[in-house]
Amino acid sequence: MFARRGNSSLDSKWWFTGYTISTIPDGSSNTIFFAEKMMVCDRQSRGNLLFHGGWDPSRAPMFNGYAVGVKFQTGANPSNCNMDLAHGFTAGGIGVAFGDGSVRNISAGVDATTWARLVDPADGQPVSNY
Image 1 (cartoon, helix red, strand yellow):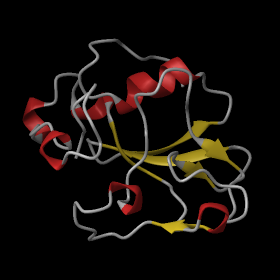
Image 2: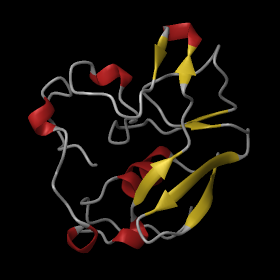
Image 3: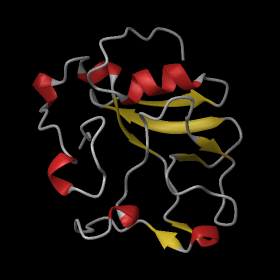
Image 4: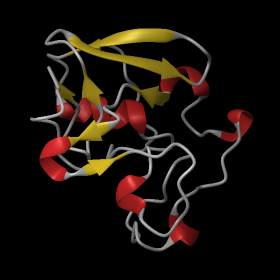
């Protein structure tokens, strides 16, 4: 579910941390589990495959959440989307699901640091305004 930081996305043994709901260091109510994402980005001729194997991580249904200064893309459509990011389908923000089962809209105005803290299950940083 959550990748280990600082390791190769091409090496499947580093893809998962092994956290369970009860062992997420930041807690399930402080961690985004799922976010909206386009199925296919025509510009990059890539698509997400729900049950994709480890032979091509670029087609797995995941997004980069740990990159410094990067957050989600709003107003995404197949001709302008970046497959490495989560995609909000409106200019107002993105729909996300937290580990505690709550569903919220994260505003497009949220800063990249706050977004990174919300998708990182073990950064140890509190997040209050988003």
